[in-house]
Length: 515
Ligand code: XMP
Image 1 (spheres, rainbow, N blue to C red):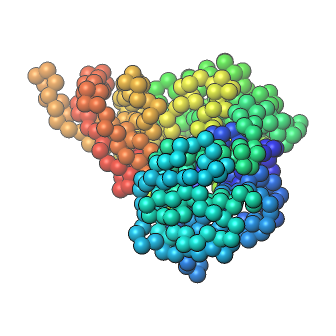
Image 2 (cartoon, rainbow, N blue to C red):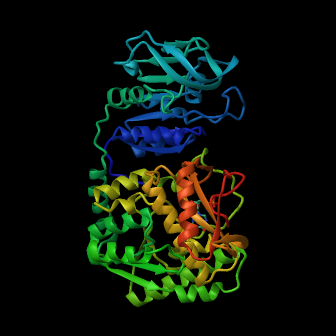
Image 3 (cartoon, rainbow, N blue to C red):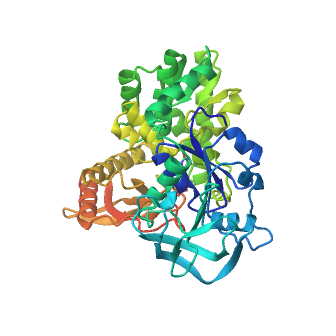
């Protein structure tokens, strides 16, 4: 990947669960950073041209034969290096110090004292609260290094070779449990590597516009606009770069939420003046879904139909050369720590199959960004907050939140119930801190009593979860009065519902969506 960013930090990933966090912390200092696998050849590193290197933590022990080790060329490069936890042990091991198993595994909060004038701790008080998570420890630092901090358990909690600008920490400066960790990273990045805070969302937008113009030339770009954060921000950014040579296609599959399609059209066509083709394909989708109850079948039908309609609409536009996609950095990192279990639990529908089928080249302006950085770009581009901070919504839409058969009546019930959930969650000021909150329509009816009448009606389940990335999630302990309000509003306002339940399962073993 080529980048225009002047000063940057490269992070070599040894498999720590915190590696992404290191990248985030550096970026928060307005310095561009990227993660590469631990064994990235030194030639590739040189080509990338970082101002400094950070070696991440990791679950291995350098004492193991199969321990992951970097290209030793990095130590001859003259670049400043910061080793964190396992990264520290790698430095020690490769530079001929001594690593030994610690008598006690040190895990959790610890106090370290640093008594040095080291650049790394410049401006910090002598005693620091830090987060430790390691089995091995440093018995003797390599030649040229001196200990610069100690803890009760680790005589060498940090070490430095100021001459070569090599530094290492036994603890994790990137986590919130190391309150002054940000300062330590700042010292490394600004003072030791000499980077300046030049990477901002403003500069990102300017550079991206240049890049998009370069890449696209006089060509035309197509964008599948879903109304979600990534495709929305991408559309506005690309529109800024190439104007009317961008065409967005919005497919209303009939499985959208209350008022959603109208809002997309209003925002992008009327406010941003983007060339938007909105296709109402509800009838086609619903016809294909008639009688289908199997979740995987629903997903396949919805995914295939989407591709078919998108292709048909694209054909009407004439010759197109590029397809815009909101691919994010975590999707492209070739990294040892992010390869989760790969079993297909659910076949997620996205537009991944399109470019190959349509022989289109990709425009992916966010390949270098994390999700919250895309939100900042959205703010820079003045997108409305309801788009920038919208909770994720699955491609198959309400189709996988209606358990059992999908039809207009059931869709209408779920839409109304869902709108109440969202309205109440927003009213309680909880919308942004919750990852997803929504209603699900169950495939059963239950008995109730309304007035003096027996009812036999539908059941709505409420789901609200917190999550960092959708891979794991926990149910939210919503206040009882909020749950009470949601329940009574749904039962009173949505005809056909007489019972509301709250889903209190985490993921795993549950999943976020019910299908
Ligand atoms: P699960 O239900 O697997 O969902 O815990 C994890 C995240 O993925 C979203 N999701 C989907 N997104 N197409 C999508 O674009 C899909 O088929 C799909 N299924 C689930 C879900 O909303 C959650 O954010």
